[in-house]
Length: 82
Image (tube, rainbow, N blue to C red; front, side, top):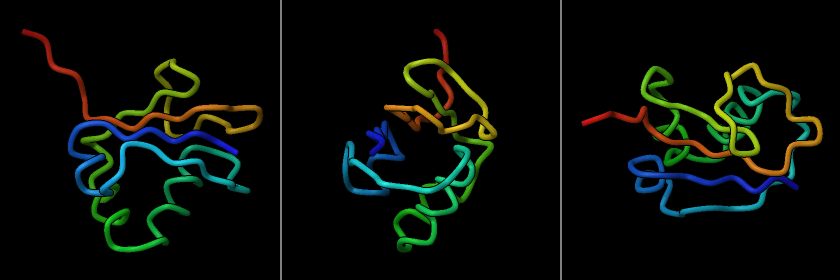
């Protein structure tokens, strides 16, 4: 099981801050494809990948990051400074 965390507008579109997911996906992108197939809320949340960042076990990662042994995935918009 992987703990999946959603932040900012990703959380708003999905309607939940977190959930535990069982997946056979090998990479973060595979997980996203599984989530998109769930329903339109997920499809909408993951529609624009250029506006999305991911952290794997609290470290920034790419969408090609492997999921083997991962405990936590977080999805959030790009951070801005100021």
